[in-house]
Length: 389
Image (cartoon, rainbow, N blue to C red):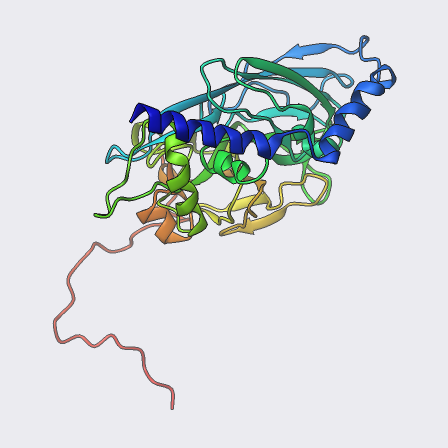
């Protein structure tokens, strides 16, 4: 068995290496061009530097909604962690690949005009090569060409945040490794705020009291002949079955933040009546349809781009696969709110749902009430709608 696992691992690593090898002309050209012209890079020695301590989603690191002063170099350290995780209440396990040890990877926040400097660390305990592709960055496959690292290596990438909005980042080693790494958990979001903050369509400033990040992922856990979920001894051992399951395009789980119920019950997000929440929602691979039961999207950047005016008063919004969106909502009623993917099959049966517990002492009866108590109707009562002939 050990020999078989070693053979599978060798095959998987060979496939991964072939997928990201620098033989394609674009990869070689990008790296060589960067190395040849390093002396032409902007001199940023005069810019202030800010080292940011990232937080595990759904939480977001401290940040200013309106930039203070001019551009700066914002520094992040992002370790890559490969580990086995439990993804539902039944104890189903899978081998995950993560940025920062969480699914999704942490939300990074900068301002337009800042320089993003990310040190990507591939831990020596990992088995796979990895890289990072920022949808917000310009050139070299979003940085993917310049950040390929083997276990035990690290690399620093710097790029200028020129477009405000919410943008996905993900691992993109090439070939079948790219979708596998993404659905195994290697995706996250960076938010580039306008320097003067968020605005409505008329230039009015918009602010939020709290920000949460929801990263939606679909998992493809293989089943055995009896329909039970299979488990494996390593990432490499799971690869052939997982790729075959992925090709069927039928996920076994669709979850928020890495597991069924990860943001429910005791792990619910919290708010208060009168508070405004910013909800950033990403899906690196498939379309999704966020909906807040008992609430709305007061202002929604469905495409996640802050140069565009937000839509208003949405019941459900649409996040395209490979993108992140943002929504603002001010709570008016206390109690439990459910935030879900309004493909209700995926929400209820596969796991794409979360809770927001809203504190408040007073119920607004003008917005909703029950004028009469619940009662039983008479058996002979006919409540059918009349037919208009």
